[in-house]
Amino acid sequence: MLPVVQAHGLFLVDAEWRREGRRWVLRLFVDRPGGVTVGECQRLSHEAGDVLDVSGLIPEPYDLEVSSPGLDRELRKDRELAWAIGKEVRCWVREPIGGRTEFSGTLVGVTAVELTVEGGHGETSMLPRHLVSKARLVPVFPGRQVQQRP
Image (cartoon, rainbow, N blue to C red):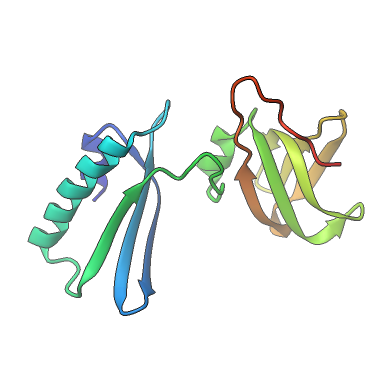
């Protein structure tokens, strides 16, 4: 599937294969610098569906969905976190750090052991990777300030 995605000038951010009700769903999340359009997702969906149907890789009935990971995408992989350096994020941790379980601000550092988030008031939080349960981008719209949480 990767060659088909790449042929469209996109990269695969994530893929999900899960049962929903009586059917299986294959979700492909694709992106590229500058974003991806609905039309591009539709074209990729048609071509990817044809390739999958001809190949016979998936014998059971399934639905194929192709979309962008969204403005508030979850950051799961190392390359996604590295890409997000300098962007606004919100992170949640499993155990309180300094009495908090939620942190937001600019992601300023990513290592194998921690994420570094700089808050709006200049405070820096070092979040151990093994405690981070979720990290998401915070959508930033032109002309609108990002709200920092304390």
